[in-house]
Image (tube, rainbow, N blue to C red):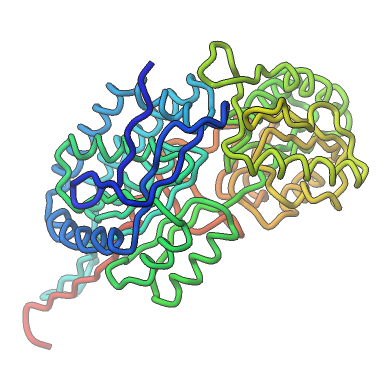
Length: 478
């Protein structure tokens, strides 16, 4: 088994240690597995200076050359899949099989945006004789990017891929709890020939780093994935400098299960997908609204599969769900369960921490949860599912839309008219019918309402990292 990597900052094409470093813990054992250097203000200033120099070089680099670097980096990460996946499991806790898939998904983001780098087409606008109007897309500049701990590899890859493909430079502050995924991205891009300064990787106090970087004139875009609360704060800070933002924020995904669906298949896939990554997914299916005619049968089958989930150390064979990522999560989930119970909800399975070592929590299913319970409005971000009955599809859509979030939503039906009504009326950036897959590299991903602004992936994603310039050219002075 590969060892956990030696952790560094990456600035101006060089690996850097600092005087201040903090422990990285394995959430399954609570043991220290590495020491993470924390950036000081001087490190951030060095990153800003090198990013400015890197942008001057990279923005003038041909799109096909940018694409080649991304493709080479993706190929290197595919070769290093086992090493990267083992490090992700050690720091995050997810099963090794899921970590392997995450590495591939991160590579797919780089590969997709490599292609998009050569397709940032402009256009010529029809005009009178002697005049030309041409629309150009140009890289926006230096990006300050912030990625979360729940997907240490794929989440940073989304932002790095878009920025580098467009010709931007990027300063990435990845999560301190799970730094190895981002480090491996930086290593692969460095080995693939990315010029110094185009990518910097820093760690440290999130508040101090974001406050310092966003205030700088060099930063032309803030890209963030994380909680709605933090996203609002960063958006406010960016607005003081008229800096645009790309925000992928929290969710509380509804699942509408119609009366005509295959109950066995819908219940099993729902229970399995809910426990993926221990429910620590912004698109995780959480609020299941099931037609009353099939409610009890669906709930029984869902609970049976959820309670059978094999929980343990992600490095052990056969494990389906690892620990939660940090010590804060079990306490937060237990508080939500207790609040729901006091409000009258029924705990069908789970609801408790497992053992005294490691941040393990039982797969949990609550049924008949009243709207007054906190969990109906707050994203649990853990292995907790809510199953409530609905009288009709219209009732389900109303319940789905009754929260301030709108990132992902799901529906199960065999009726075309039901599918069409859900697609049209559910307030979410991503609506999936008969599948719990919310995004792919080739599809645009993002939310509405309090779930964020802008899109990553698809042909739309790279445009967030670019500005639109209109060129008016008259052949004579007018």
